[in-house]
Length: 224
Length: 414
Image (cartoon, rainbow over all chains, first blue to last red; front, top):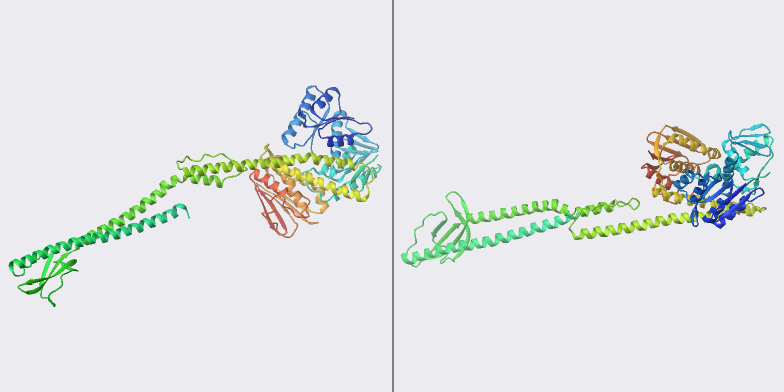
């Protein structure tokens, strides 16, 4: 997939770029309004990660320009502004998703994957990883024709891991993904552990491999 | 004591004392003048008697008159000393107070004592009138002062009371321009100007402070985002020792706390500024059920028994805020609960009550709603209840806490 990261903070831009760069991905960056506008007029991307506050212009203008030209690039807005107006305005203008800073890279990746999936599958709502087959519309998971009955959270967890294949995902990121940032309960990660234990058990019982590895007590990694 | 009352008390007391003293002086002076007048009358009479004796060498005949009595008598001592006395005047009907003159009269070498007396009834009447007038003036003054205070002073002080009520209603967060009644009194105008200048200054500083808080919290977002993303990147590099991963884990925990704290601050500023305006009709029962469902794992994790008594209730508010309100109270109820404890949620038409077991001591009602108040072992931001309270205040809900052992009782009057 081809991704454009429009972000003026060098630290953040580099981290995102590094996180997304891997075989099969092309990752480009822009650090201000003008270079961003140049890039979107020259190339097409599967997903554009767009910061709203940019030097020399507003990110929303870039979004408008995309829509005016009928470019169908997926757009995910990242902004420090949590104001509901901004969020609504962004989504009204045709952004596909909105993520508030600060966020975990794994969360961004999951969101970007979802945007690209929605854009490119065009009605094809099947997602496959080795023997695991997921019907995104029915929210059902199969391994070799064995239906696996997952809870809502386990299903979300599986998609999150698939989007972050080969990456170590921290327990904090998982907790925030599953329960949202409105919930302050970080005192205790035992419940994540039990969710993951159950998910692993269900996948393996259905004949799947054991993909999820605990990493040094910091988080988990889904490895092929 | 009110300024009026104090002023009146001094004023009236002084007036009464002064009038009484004046009355006394009046009385003294007038009775002196009148006595002098009587004395003169008596002296005229004396002269007449002396003239008569000198001419006729005998005592004059005594007539009873209305206002004078003369008696002659043989003195015990000869000659009697001439003197004015206060005596009684015997009228036909009654004994009246009088003024008399005792004088020696020599008729053909023989000494007599003559007593001339006159009634002083009229003098006494005069004094009575003066006394009545004095009392009358006192009463009149008191009445007039009373009415002056009541109507004129009250009116004069109206500006003052307007300023006072404005000061006592002064609220930096909710500033309203108000017209103070026009006054011609310089002091009040000065006071009003001072109050106005002060409130403008306070308001300006408050706004600047608030802006600063917002900006500070906002500016912190980017560095936090960078730390967060660098941490996410760091854990992708392989081979950490156990010690290193423990440290990383702690770092993650701290950054996520920082994140929550920062978000809470921004949210609080936003709610306080009334920036979250959009309102919808919310089915509270539905939302509570939904929130509880999302907390399900946490209940299980702590083995909490959750019991519900939910009636259907619709409110008009902002979705996002009510969700935060419920999240904050519920996550507190979980976080501060005992293992295997209980949570009760009761919703009816009037109120929403969330009860939880926990420590067996009542929490300090004032402290818990204060910013950054939290137990030392708590990982929370210390803003959860402050935000909940602020949201309630936004919608004019009463948010209160009470401890009915073993339950901590958080109640929102809808």
